[in-house]
Length: 479
Image 1 (cartoon, one colour):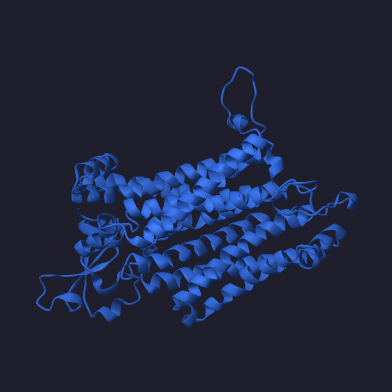
Image 2: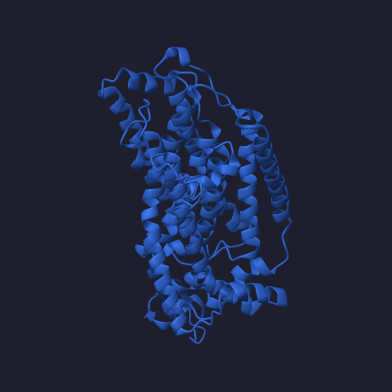
């Protein structure tokens, strides 16, 4: 199979030291080596660690199915919802999972349009992460309506009863925003997979594999016409997906800000939510890729340069989130509104003080360690910070939802919210869905976008008398 850069190779002379500024595959490997490395993960024997991860994930997925069936058969009263906390863990986890999916669209679409070549080693994993995270998020609005069998009323389908969706409802905005985001993400992910599926088809050793990969490769031959159509389609989908980075989580934030509740009714929410979503999304990409690059022996494709750049994006978005926190408290004070001041004071010193402080420390303070190169080069430190980023973003959603609801305008309505075992088990079950899908993905589909990596990697010329990294290099440019 020929990569997209095979039609426009540019000769690059000089020692490899001059090319160190380019985030490339280590040691300037050949296209065949990259293919063997990525495809070998799928074609080789299933490693033991995969089973140790897959079986517990499948168990958690079973738990999720059991909790959903229990909820449907019993009612939403099995959750910890009460008056005035009508929204609980379901909405918290919905927003959290949607946020995690944002890094995939940013890496795939926005960085592609900005011609950032370093995205090629991590975009496939982040795209898959997006799809599975949105699947986990999409469960909650459906089961949160209570009578799940009427969930189809959320779509504007013609019916004899003239029952139409209420488009003034924030729930409707979520349905259309999330379904659009999911559809475009799946298309973008699948289109990028087509050349790699053709590679797996051609390397298949069994007729079943050859048929399945060939079916989804859509007759790809790697001809110039195919590459031309592929690049046009990929560019169009990238253009469609880019506005979704801003629109989807902005729509989710409007669920809160259109209300009159102190702590929610503010115009800072859309950019604040988008920055937090990208922050948590990159945190999850780091959480997944740091161990995977070691376990799958992909250190020379997902290099420390990629980890370093992801850390810098995490630092930037974490700093934006920290600035948004400062502005929130400033707005609450400067407004002179006693209800706003009361709500934000109790975020730090009320019954849920631990959530407020965890939000500030994990999201605004902890990522500042990425200013130091030694921290960015320490995989253990990066892995810990990436986990804390997602913990902090979960507490942010908890503080926004519960911290603003449990004390409303009338003190007689005040209550205390705590999740039930059904809330906890349902949340754990979504992790089972996510990791089950992700583990199946890395077992049967290429984790790395092989053809895109080839397109941005200088490869050693095997015909040069010096050979290896000391010979002439050819830098392939995608498109």
